[in-house]
Image (cartoon, rainbow, N blue to C red; front, side, top):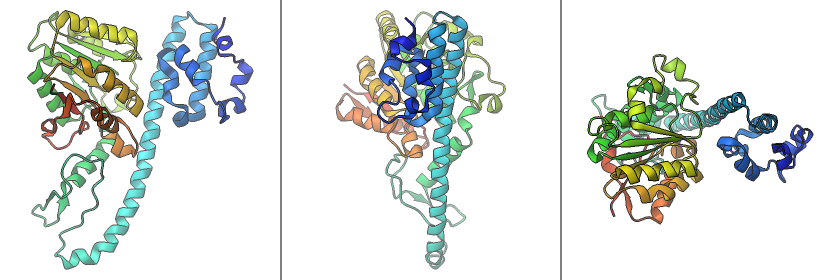
Length: 376
């Protein structure tokens, strides 16, 4: 029986606008989650809208006719990566519009406070601290030798805007492999791995292998191949980069498979982190190599996925080691629940972990409140 028949759909139904946009039952998401490979449905139709639904419909049609066609499998993997890029672009556009609105409001505030600033010897203006910030305290202000007072959070968050809006995360690499960490986090993460010297790292969200190669490089300095391992998981192939700006901003980046550390220290599993093959690989690695164990949560940055992964994999983290929940900054930038809120909600019901602020020693980090140390 074809996939269309299993879904109870016909090609004519798939292409009718009523079936795609109807508010009653716009798309059988639960069926898609079970049937379509790599969880195409998790792209959330409410965000990617009709474009995603049409592509998912095309996927159903394609796999209905070519269920065993390897080439079609490859094409669908490319589509998956492109859909992730669409999601990222949508969020980027949304954040840019939010920034424009904020700049307009800021200009009004500057004009409104101009007289007050002149009367106070031009010490400058500060604005309310975003409640999602955890870089510094609300009242931390510096006055450089130009006489203008600046709140530290404004400086750090301003850099964060530049880092995100100019896609600077696409420009970095580690040993030639694109890594989307900012420089400060690269230093902190390598320090953390060196301090813990884990035997097993569960790397959720491989993309093209930048984090895995960083982990492998540090691991190679304290363990021989076969003594420790990185289990790196991603639903897409690591040769497919969701980042459309990578070629432009990191033209000298090389495929991770070209680096000998990849084969020596990394076990790649093409699956979601919570899927049985991935979990089985993690448990087998722990059984073989023991601890310490680090969990790096850097996959799909939506609240439900991050919250699920935190709760599911916390038990594997050894006492004294870490679960690193990455890109918590996105809650503030996009103005919605994401990795940061998932961390807070996870900690409400798990007293075995605490936020280690010492890992934010350089003040700016993409993972603020995301370095979770297991204390018991």
